[in-house]
Length: 82
Ligand SMILES: [Zn+2]
Ligand SMILES: [Zn+2]
Image 1 (cartoon, helix red, strand yellow):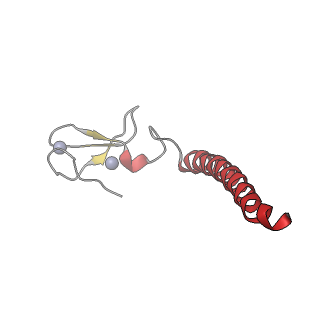
Image 2 (tube, rainbow, N blue to C red):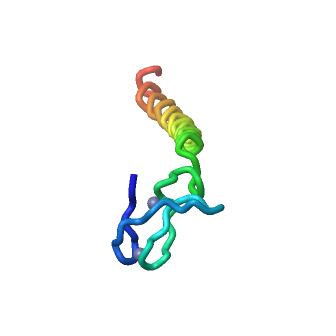
C-alpha cells in the first residue's frame, strides 16, 4: 500500500525510523493515514462509542414517544369514557 504525498503528489516510501508511516522523498512530508490506528481512534472504539450514543438517543426518543403516546391516548379516550 503506497500513498501519494498530500503536498506534492510524489509516491511516498515507508519510513523505517521510530516514527512509522511513510515519508515523501521529495519534500519530506510524513503520512500516517495509511497506518489507520496510529494517531486516529481505532474503528472498533469509534463504532462502540457511536452505538452507545445511538442507544442513548433511541432511549430518549422512546421516552418522548411514550409520553406523547400516553398523552394523545388520554385525549382520545377521555371523551368516550364518560
Ligand atoms: Zn511531497
Ligand atoms: Zn501513508
